[in-house]
Amino acid sequence: QASPTRSNVDTSVSPICKLDCSIFEDKELVFMSRDEIDRCSPSRKDGIDVLRERHLRYSYCAFLQNLGMWLNLPQTTIGTAMVLCHRFFVRRSHACHDRFLIATAALFLVGKSEETPCPLNNVLQASSEILHEQDFTLLSYLLPVGWFEKYHDRVLEAELLLLTTLNFELNVEHPYTSLTSVLNKLDPSKTVLVNLALNL
Amino acid sequence: MAMAAPGQLNVNESPSWGSRSVDCFEKLEQIGEGTYGQVYMAREIKTGEIVALKKIRMDNEREGFPITAIREIKILKKLHHENVINLKEIVTSPDGNKYKGGIYMVFEYMDHDLTGLADRPGMRFTVPQIKLLTGLHYCHVNQVLHRDIKGVLLLMPSKDTCSNLLIDNEGNLKLADFGLARSFSNEHNANLTNRVITLWYRPPELLLGTTRYGPAVDMWSVGCIFAELLHGKPIFPGKDEPEQLNKIFELCGAPDEVNWPGVSKTPWYNQFKPTRPMKRRLREVFRHFDRHALELLEKMLTLDPAQKGQDKLWICTCCLCRFFLVGNMSRSNLQANTATLAGICIFHNSLKHSIWLPSADSSHIILYAL
Image (cartoon, rainbow over all chains, first blue to last red; front, side):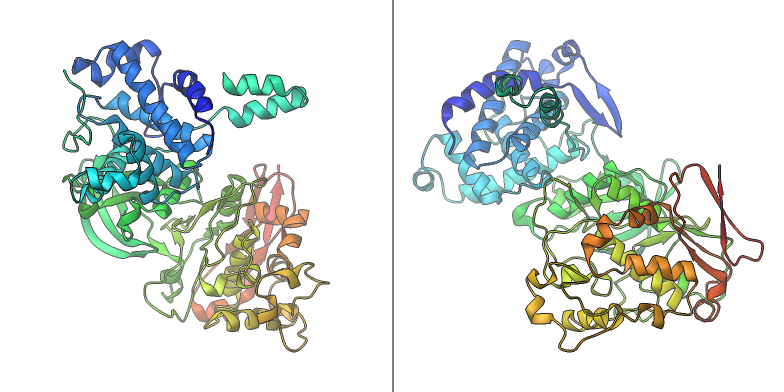
């Protein structure tokens, strides 16, 4: 398991950079400016202001980073899940969709679409441990009978909601590969530069 | 207003974006079964357009939306080519429980598959261009392995195995059914399952248990179909895996370290290796084929997958060759009159700048380079 400090660093920086505002609608790219997202986000209608929503974004990204590292998933999978969550909440409000449920479903779904599948039970177990900050064995004593089955069904429901909301568009292009190839062409020895660029 | 409570989801909210409802279509009739679901012919109510609806089967609900469907959707969204079936959209049933109601992929409607056409005697083609290879080459360039190409002209073992090659009334051919397709990348040589491709069209490296493979697997299937079209019946109709390998060895010769370096290291080589020496009899068995067709077939049915890959000619072949089927494509005609059926491969640097036309007596194809 990776150290928690790195995950903290990552989450505080990366989400906002990765907040690429592209949404795919019927094979056509729809770009929204930062300002448009701030103004038109469906959460606005439910009285969640820009600052609050930004905080909510940070919180599910931090959660995803944590969950992904817990499950040993590669960074592209985690990053893709973050982008899918961003795309989801540009279309639906935070007020009526639990962001951690959506995030859990997103990571599970992206695991499959990025060919790094993780059994649903492992995802559920890890996410409930993180959310409740309790050991899994203890949780079954603390929570009502059948909670795990219910949670399982909720996450699958969220997966479908995510798929239909995003119109089954799961392709996300990340800058990582092109970035490293360019940097390698420049000077492969400059690892400092590579690390700096990756952490940007 | 307060935040969503833990576990809260509003699945009934119907937004103005996202996937449309299956109610936009009117089902006309069931037209077949794909690798994992029924296929219906349907009409879009608003436009009147005829489409094919393929229902996604939800078998393993424990693991949510099936990974095979995710792969197929992802791949089809990436591929846009005149010889690859076009995925128009995905629609869902409107009720809350989408698992019960179902999710459908909407495809352009194609009139025939290869099986249906070959079974219809007297069916007349007007210079149909079978462009399987251009479609397939396009997939490989985009790093997609199809892994389930099959023709099955005759002797269908069961009704639900049908061809994945669809043809419309204009004679356009499209590659369909990406239910087993996978993306591959050259650097990332991941282990893949070897239990893909309908047995008769499965290449020897998969039958010998290899889990690292590339575009060569699809080329083998194409070779089998090509030979099947010329021969009039499947060339390797094996009942099970040992028999399948045996049929391949009987025609293509037994593999050894000379013609296929590394074959003895494949997982199941010792189990399946031929007990007696076998010569390659391809040219002898198919001597009645067109000379060019035989040359192409020799390349596509090479035992060693690496030779298929490294051979530059092979790459030229797969992007530049097209088969033209001219005249009557009934069963007897296929076998008797191979002269009207010209299989051709020509090596040229750019397909885009060339025109292909049948010669006056339809016996061969002339390439006009521009």
